[in-house]
Image 1 (cartoon, rainbow, N blue to C red):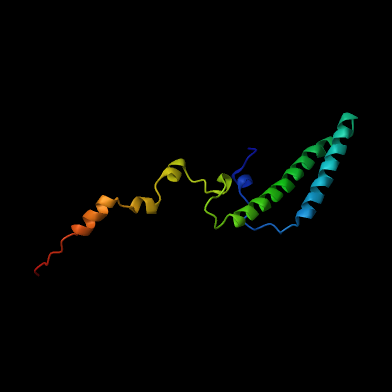
Image 2 (image 1 turned 135 degrees about the horizontal axis):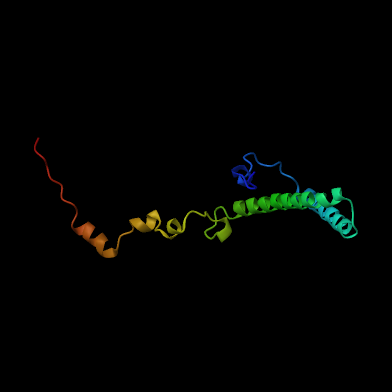
Length: 130
């Protein structure tokens, strides 16, 4: 079976329960200490069950870090919501062409010369006989 499926890259639709940062850091410390003991067991020639557990612990650490980083990023999004300048990693990705394109305001702007032409020579209105 393929290692990466389409479902593995999707973010969970339901928001995670808001875990307190202290709980997450405590859990992270526990996992890291467990990983350290497992690595010692690996060097000293521990049981096969301990060796296979290393991968699981590493994945668990990654999950905890992911939750922490997502929470941090969400807080930053809230902080920068109404600011003029937003960090690059918080901006919309879109495509390079769309990012470079003129905004609606820029596209609708007229030069001073065009504004004068429009003012002094408005489009003529004709009465049409029915």
